[in-house]
Every structure is written in structure tokens, then in C-alpha cells.
Length: 568
Ligand SMILES: Cc1cc2nc3c(=O)[nH]c(=O)nc-3n(C[C@H](O)[C@H](O)[C@H](O)COP(=O)(O)OP(=O)(O)OC[C@H]3O[C@@H](n4cnc5c(N)ncnc54)[C@H](O)[C@@H]3O)c2cc1C
Image (cartoon, rainbow, N blue to C red):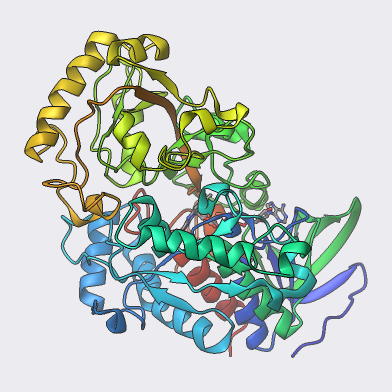
């Protein structure tokens, strides 16, 4: 391995400098180290893990080696047909191919050479079941649980999970378990008891931290990768922000960083990998690039993702792409919580409906979350505003299913809601009364619900076809028949909740090629500069082919960037 060294005029010298500490950054650092490069990871905030740590931790990885064992075989041809079918012409074909060819190798590499361990989710369907080459599951994989004790003191420096991924804001569950609990699939009561028991009986850890040590989802993934960096002795400096790129003779040779208030010049002989996330928390950039209205408070993402890497890339002459897009989803802003929550499951469960200010539906609520927000923006008019939209449901829904931060009423009735959440739902004995409280057209809402209830009884949504695909039904309630996503909204009191066009992070950024190299407007690579994850324009274009379509590419192109910068 090339030793870290100092070069005159520089405070620190490495082969590869990685800016940011999400899973893509860590995958790049691991691969570069394993190719005998010296590596440094710098992270702006005082916690590592970024959005990745807050996430579901899933990867969309066609042809991954775990699929066959899960009973869902795949083929490169089908993966290509499906990805091309969802992304269309928004991304050059060679980048799509680079992704599909490398993601299985990256998953295998991480599984065999690091502490990362995954399981395929055989029932987590690709999002577009009408596109040829789709799979009913298996391409999405999730990390296994990871014991935080393997991280020692480093654990408490990890970014905490978004609360929507936790039971009662503290107990971890896997993606598979989340579905069982939230849709009340068979075994959900026993599972609840097991997870609660595991947490509360975990002595003496309970006296050490309120944070659950049985990490799952994004915390598990980041934990596995952080432990693998520790195994390799790769340094990760917290509170160290990249501020400027240093360019010599047209090549990026390092960055000027700010570490705890001090300016540092860090030289990177083989390249700089920008992995500093999107611009979800930068209101000025949102106003400039995203469809309006848009607010940083509607985002589920990390507060430190302020588009820094995009600005740095622009300063070196980089081109941008997809800047008007994000990993959209309808979100709810919960009083007292730092991040919005996405209504991923709630929107699909039977007995609820999303409407605009006229009280009219505008989308298949069970569709992929990006489609719901795209419909919000597409259908909004001055006459029928769709921002916010309103999730309307009845007492039966409230009794059976958790919603946002609130457990189902069978476990947490309205009178048990903490003070901060008393006004979280609006509530009325009549549909019209609820509409008036929320500023929705009462006659419009009444008419919508009457029509929706007819569909629910027949099991057929003639307007938007909700519940017709395996993906729709993934977050439905299979006990509700004939359609797991439809039930009448008829039992008072009626409830309502505002929902906004939020996201899990933005997806537009620096234009890159098959090797993750940052490109100029003319299409030429900027020597020494790579970009991956949400600071790069996504390989998924305007689409979201399946669960994990953001972290899968971030890790894959991180792995590719390291290979390119440090050839074997
Ligand atoms: C609740 C939730 C659930 C999600 N579930 C999934 C899922 O299951 N699968 C999936 O694929 N995606 C999921 N996502 C989206 C996913 O988390 C992100 O798209 C992804 O993690 C982005 O990765 P990244 O590497 O681009 O950035 P991040 O993981 O956000 O890392 C960027 C890091 O860079 C740091 N940084 C910023 N500026 C600087 C600077 N100037 N210098 C140094 N460091 C800097 C930030 O502090 C941050 O730590 C979810 C997101 C959320 C919020």
C-alpha cells in the first residue's frame, strides 16, 4: 500500500480522497484500499453515514447472487430490458450497462471481502410490473441485522436512523419486518413482542444507550461498511468539509478542506471522489432547480446534504443533469421531528385515499412514491391545488394501521396521543366536517368518497387501478379482499393529514460517465474527479425501478470509481 505522506505545500497526501461518508463513499474507500491505495474519507458533519444511515438500506441489484436462493432467478437480458424500459433515453445506454454489469460483482465483493451481509427480498417487487423484464421480487436486497458492539465507540458517531424506520422511535426492524408489522401480515403480533423483548431485555446495553444495538436497514449497512473500514485502518475524519477543489494543469489534485475551523490542503494523487449527497437541505438550490412549491422541511433527508459537491464540480467546469428531479415521495411533517416521514405504506393501505383541495383523487395511491409526487406537481392547478395533498381515512383504518408517528388506535387510541401529536390528525364525525376543517371542498370530498367506496366494495378501482399489480399489493393488507389496497371509508370519525411533495434526497447532479468520471459540457472527463451517489446525475434517470435504486448505484459507481482511479 502507498503510505500516506506529506507533500510540500500540502497538509496531507493520499492516493484517493473520498468526500462524504454514505455507503457509496465507503464502498469506494474499501475498494481503493484493497487495491493498495492510501485513502482518506472526510465527512462534514459530526456523524458519519449521511442519508444512507437514515435509510432503509436496500440495494436494487439485478442478477445479484442471492436471488436464486430466494427463488427468483434473474437474467442479464431481462435486467437490461427492464432497466432500459423504465429509464428510457434519459441516460446513455453504456452507463446503464455499466451499472448492470458491475452491481452483481460489487454485491459479491462486499459480501465476500467485507463485513457486509445481505438477504434478497423475494416479495419486494420491481416497481413497474407492466414493463417487460420485471421481477416480482429478489432484485432488492437488504442488509442483515448488525451488532453495533462490533463498532465499539464508533457506533455513537453514526448518523441516527430516520424515525420512520424505527418502532416507537427507538427499536430497529428490517425492511421485511417493517412490512409484516405495518400491513399486519400473519405473525405481526408475535413479531412485535419479539422485537420489543429483544430491545428491552438487552441488559446491560440498555444502561449504555437508548439506541438499539441490533442495527437494521441503513444503520446496519453503514455499520457493516464502517467496521470494514476500521478493519482496514482507513481513516474517516468527521467535521471536515470539502470547500474547494485544487486544479493543476486541468487535473483535480486535491481539495481545500475545513476541519474543525482549520483550513487544510489535502492532496489526492489518484483522484477525488465526490460522494457528498444531494441538495435536499439547500432551500436556495431547491428554489432554483426543483419544481415549485418546494421546501427543505418536506424532505426526509440529511440536513448536511446542501449540494456542496455539485457546487465544487461546477467550479471545475462540470456539466449538470436531472437537476429538476428527486427521489420523490409524499411526506408528512411531524411536529417536533427533525425530518419529514414518507407515507410509503400508509398511502397503499386499504381505507385511505389521497385527494387535492377540491376533494378529488389524482393518482393511484399505491403507485411507486415518485409517481405520486410527479402526479401532485403534474395535476396541480390554481383551481385544484395539489400541494398539499390530503390523506383521508376512517376509524377502521385508524384502528388497524400505524400512520406517520402514530401507532394503530388498537394500541394507541387518540386519547393516548402525546400532547405534541394531538393536532397531528384532523378529525370529524362527518366527511364534510373534516373537509371544512382542512380547507377541502366538502361536496367534492363527499362525492370522491362515495365513488371510492363503490370501487372498494367491488374490489376494482375504475379511476386509477389501485391494487392491480403485485407492487401495489406489496404494501396492501392481504386480509382485505377482494382487493388488498381498497376498503370503504365509511366508519366515523374520519381523519385527515396534510401531505407534501417531499423526497428521500435529490437525484440531479454532476454528469458522469461509465467510469464515474465527472464530465464537462463537451463530454470530456475532468481528470482526477469522480462523482457518485446523489451529487451525480442518477443512472436511473427520471425513474425509480425498484427499492434500493439509489444506494445500489451509489455503491456500484463508488466501486467503479476506485477501480478506475487505482487500476490493479
Ligand atoms: C427514510 C429514508 C429511507 C430510504 N430508503 C432507501 C432505501 O432503502 N434504498 C435506497 O436505495 N435509498 C433509500 N433512501 C435514499 C438514500 O438514503 C439516499 O439516496 C442515499 O443514501 C444517498 O447516498 P449518498 O452517498 O449520495 O449521500 P449520503 O449517504 O447522504 O452521504 C453524503 C454525506 O456527505 C456529507 N457531506 C455533505 N457535504 C460535504 C462536504 N462539503 N464535505 C464533506 N462531507 C460532506 C453529508 O454530511 C453526508 O454525510 C432512503 C432515504 C431516506 C431518508
